[in-house]
Length: 426
Ligand code: SF4
Ligand code: SF4
Image (cartoon, rainbow, N blue to C red; front, side):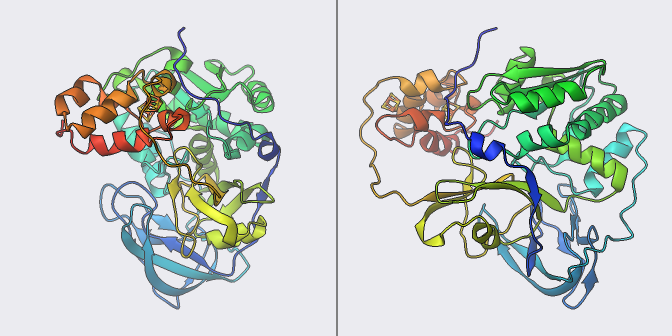
């Protein structure tokens, strides 16, 4: 099978070997009412109320929303405002932990016997895609129709991210049990789990966990970024192509992240909603990188202090990692539900400025979608919509490979993102 292009990123073995460690309870958590793609939730508690872990504190009033739950037990101190990475102001519930971590009586294992039960459970648990996207899992299950293949994404292809690798190494049975549950309820006969081939321990532990399980296969993926992008992952795990303007669901495939799958299984056993996040804290400004289990709403500043990161040397602070992560501001940032990484990069002494395109073709050779990124850039400058359409701009998944390899340091991927805005709606 032909392999799609991409780029080789530096290997971060040092972080991959660090076990997942519980983060000490912070002095205050701030839980935003929007930590998913869709509409924000409405607070259901007021200042002065006592709350328990797993208690619903934000109601999902609109259909494109899932509830938000308390990640700590304690007292609500205020309902303030939070500015999300997409620059939206949403309500935010501040809770002072009491240190007891009392679990709410509402947390009981749900009855899950049918696909409808599973969709309801995914919604009530506040489950979102845990690879960083924050898409609504219940919607994905609804839209999946009748898939014949489940693909679990264990690619974790960006450098500075290692929590999925740790999950596969430390708790592989939760992922496999989750896959078996999904296969049974959705009547799927086959599951393929894509894992980067340069993570031999994770591959081995997962292979051991699924030994004897009919229909589950581990597929080692090339150690090239972006293996985790849906189109690339689907092609490399089963050879199917997702056509332009279509999704995996259109070709009979349900794609979930390994962490999302493990979470759904754990929720089915405990009834504890999504209140804790596994996060890799790393980057060139972090002296003690590590993999942490963090209550949702923990201030980013607390994590930087814990990992010996000097705030004064930070240039970029990212939710996620350097290729597809989103820049955040230190002042009020907190760990959100879909966040798998916190990356702090040193301020660069010399900022290289972009120069003219030398037409070297490197961006074209790196593009996993076989696009011609520099030609798309030129079409955008000309505002040539037809050229953008024939150049298949819509296939661009903003992976950043083109910008990464460009010797002229041109923001090729960013320009293509701007170009998408001038395309007419489908
Ligand atoms: S054009 Fe789009 S898909 Fe291709 S490398 Fe650039 S960002 Fe990635
Ligand atoms: S990699 Fe940069 S310099 Fe080379 S063709 Fe692409 S945009 Fe031009």
